[in-house]
Length: 174
Image 1 (tube, rainbow, N blue to C red):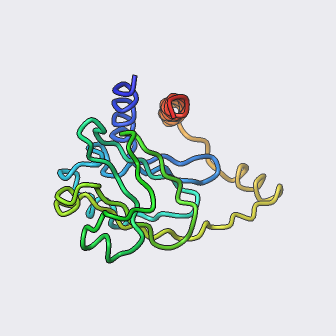
Image 2 (cartoon, one colour):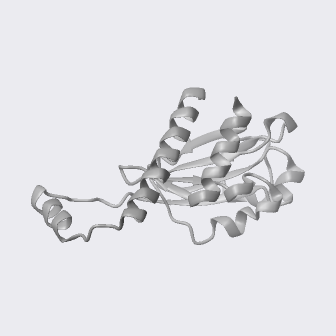
């Protein structure tokens, strides 16, 4: 069952890269379609991405290899790959981490060798963007928006259906 969930998530990441929730949160799958793997170039994957309070990051990796993920306290611990005193440890192979506070967050492989081979992630979490929307401004936006083509509506519907199924399945397993 877990293999099916991982396969589904990897397929969906390849399909659209990241997903946005109705509340504006973003779900990032660390490393893209390869997941938490040295070949996924974690540093280049994360560069240019914007992480905000309320976003989620997903770590996909093989828990059977006992190559877990630890959250570290400092940039120094991350840079030196000192994984001896983590804040948290993630061991499921499919781990969803909510970014619930502003500022830096540091993640690394629990294996010093894995960390030194690039399995580490520094995420700077920015505040949420407030969205003051009134009933009138919402009506104006809907009235002014052009209608998408039938093929575009079908693509969006299929994407939303796939993500809904994936999120429901992962939520069921977690």
